[in-house]
Length: 207
Image 1 (cartoon, helix red, strand yellow):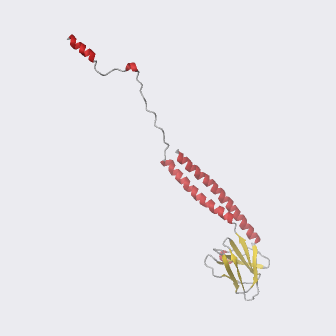
Image 2: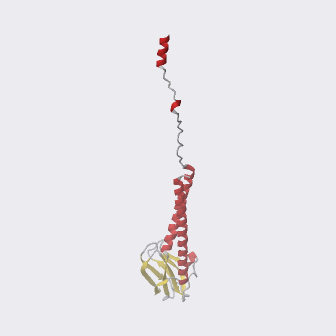
Image 3: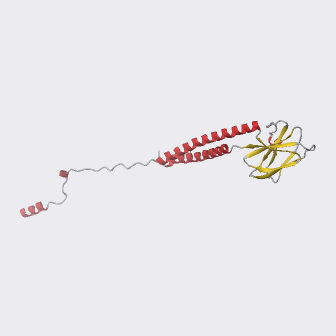
């Protein structure tokens, strides 16, 4: 096997192993953080009474569960939002009942796609003066990064291994040419091919 092929396959296998480890660690960390968040319901960020509007900084690395006073209803709207930054009712993603907070009912989550000062408006409560609460669940950024790098590393390692396999069939091990055979001839075996001029002249005189 060619040396370049060995190096390529070796690098590919090492990257694949490291990527698998990074992906596993990142996934475990992310899921553990999410489980703790769902159990605890995040941390309390703000409370108020309807009708009201919350104004404050929101981050894309967090999700914001919204709660309303038990047996009450409320309409929630993220002002100046879009399809990536909005309030998602729990009926939309079938998450109703995911959180339990004494005296409150979970109604959905607010997501934002970038950090900014956002406004969340609470209205539509006929009774009015209902307690509303925003909680914050921070995502495990390090776990997400580890998971992402692990996935990208896995794809890259497979690419390197593919190149290595191609090298297996295209690159051949180079061999040094075998030394040419040299024939040694003993000095006493050499015979002169030149005519013996002395003998020729001697023969002429005799004639």
